[in-house]
Image (cartoon, chains in turn yellow, brown):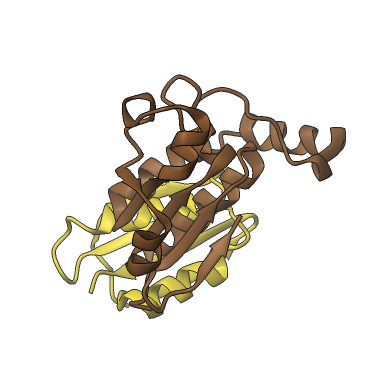
Length: 78
Length: 137
């Protein structure tokens, strides 16, 4: 199993739309291409939002898991 | 997605401004330029000394709507002004005051919050809007 090296984390739990995406976009911007970011969010819209955002921006959604109310996304920077 | 999103903000209540700020931040996160044109009561809400005050809610909110809005705010939702600031930090968001509305309210740009980039007329707004959608809130 590959162990991904997380360059940065975004704790967007409790934040409402669009802040999980906004925080993630702000966090990922200064990182090097290929850097990996882990995001935790409770906004129910984040499930569709993160896949749409990744498709549109070219960042890669590597993992998406849900544990109770918390959604976890692992994204590789374009 | 390269065409700008163009928002004409007319209403100055907190709920409509919040919805506009969310649309703006979402577009900015996708790398889409956003042009915001402030008219009438929306422009009034962007006055430097008023921006962080309570601007009320649209009539359809009623007292029950007020409770829901207050609960979301108490849970830590960013204000619309803060959401616009985040959107501007993230992307290409230009916020312009309608010059007619400036006359109507008897104000100049020094009275406006620094979120407002400048003053323009409707012709400049349409020119910058290009082929992009125009949304009126």
